[in-house]
Figure 1: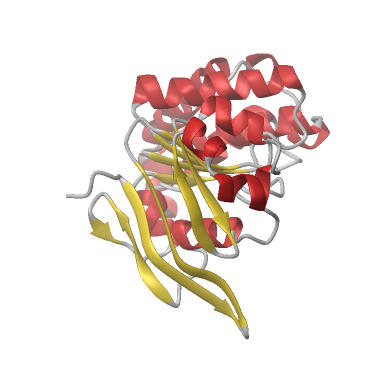
Figure 2: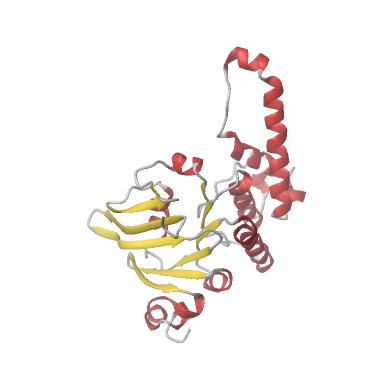
Length: 257
């Protein structure tokens, strides 16, 4: 079995005459926080789309827990423990923060019809109570419990980003994909985000893979960093190794970084 809980290898994606990804690779181990960085247009989000099942690659494969999931749907991957956030906020703005987390657990569903409505009422109430309790626990972990009754659409950007993270955790993940999670956050909010991610990895063994333009945030948080440039992996290693790589400094960080 692979040492990675999530691994993508040999990934190729073409948009017409443009080769967006060429033999790209990424992997993350249980309990690890791995960062994916690179210049604009490097292919980071495209690779995320492939890993999460939104886009099917022209070449390569994606493995989840040793199973080839390249042709599996995002829903199938979610049912097997994968969660993702997006660059563009995806909250249900007309629901409260707490309800956003409850809805995130509804997809497992269960029951239906008039008979189920009558005979299944106690079971539905128990499920609802359990979901509410889980939502409250996650909000406390994320430092958001005071926001539970607030409408999500009224939140400032940084708080909304944290609620998106909390919603991704409502149904506990084994693999968490975060696309620009620190975008729009203050320094204090980034510190809070970092603490929650570290807790997930260290205490719950969650594998975390994140794309982020804030290089300082990535270098401080991640144990390992992968650098994409023009759709291929330019470098991979610890933050210190990546910083010291002359190719990375020239392509992305700047020659005097």
